[in-house]
Length: 468
Ligand SMILES: Cc1cc2nc3c(=O)[nH]c(=O)nc-3n(C[C@H](O)[C@H](O)[C@H](O)COP(=O)(O)OP(=O)(O)OC[C@H]3O[C@@H](n4cnc5c(N)ncnc54)[C@H](O)[C@@H]3O)c2cc1C
Image 1 (cartoon, rainbow, N blue to C red):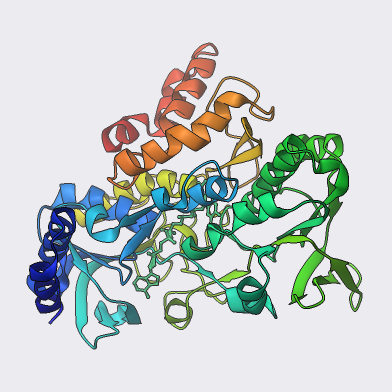
Image 2: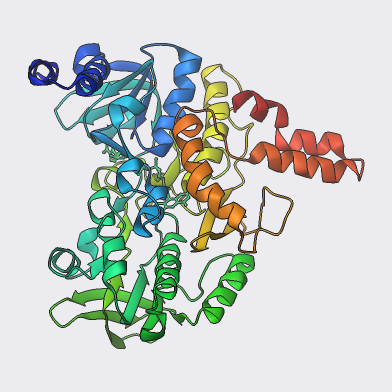
């Protein structure tokens, strides 16, 4: 049926490009492949799902790997901060899913609704069942626009209430920044976990810089309201960001939890987490909201999750704690690190090695993930602090310079190089994070101390080289 609808559209379409896209999606759609059993099934065709499925399509060959993904579009979410600041066009961060899924991977265009890991079975929203030998969970996290009272109404009715957290709403952010001619500009950070915890303040720094460059900064109060007790979770970068907010006269309200927006009275209503029962009402002239996030319902009710609703993994091997043929990657997991695409890159090479070993009857515990994650903290147009750290919040910096400093090079790394890397290597399964460079840095440092062999072995340099 799906193929028939596509063919009908094809005959009507006069646009050659559209025809090519449609033809490709037909060749990838589940109805054409009609398989109900795969060696590897990946649930979710976002950043993690694409990186993993591409790697395994190369290892396992055609018709052995399937991605279950209902969406027509793949979204490069790290680009939304740049779009919100007017640096890039949001449409450049959205591509057709049919063009993103690697050759050799079957796309099952449906939603997984029920997981039966005891029988290696997934039930889809169209009623079909898919069986697997191995499963990778990569379903991401839900951005919950219903999680704040009045948010949806405010986004629909007040042009000065904005949120970069969807392809549809991100395009309203920069026009609102441009319209702002003074008063209170408020930027919010919800309760954790959220993806890319640095993002809510990046958009604030861009807006503040825009106000400065356009003569409205003197008439503006810029406030960052966060639920956290600190500006950022890792001390080195928190110290650097505190310098930035001090120097730029940005007001920091910690332990402020946005619970309601009253757009008719232009008020943002917060509860104080450090003073239970205390409500704070702030008037706004511009309000940027980061909505709360949570696991998708289908995942939360599955037997694959822990009590918080996230896929329950061994934090070093990325293997499921109860079902050894199940692995997970990215935002849907309970890995205690910041949820970022950078983390996923590093996880993808670890997962590929351990799952690949398991498939070959070898040790699935060999590669160990250290929690590597990264957040390019844009602090102005042309300035970025590149935070990189591990599970313990210990900086794991790629470059042999102090990354706690604002730098123009890091801004271009974020705005130009990273999108290029994402589209051309990451989603194709050729980018496993900067682990190898970190290892060679460590190697160089340690070789001076005559411990080359140990570091080489600790880092698993050989295998990472092979997998990248
Ligand atoms: C504003 C913003 C800024 C960011 N900035 C950065 C940054 O600077 N650097 C960085 O590294 N990261 C950044 N991130 C984070 C990064 O984008 C995410 O961590 C990453 O994209 C998550 O990838 P994922 O594969 O886990 O989930 P996603 O990419 O969200 O993909 C999950 C996929 O699973 C599908 N799915 C969900 N449920 C089901 C189901 N039941 N059945 C089948 N499919 C399902 C969804 O449709 C989706 O396509 C940012 C994120 C945002 C929102």
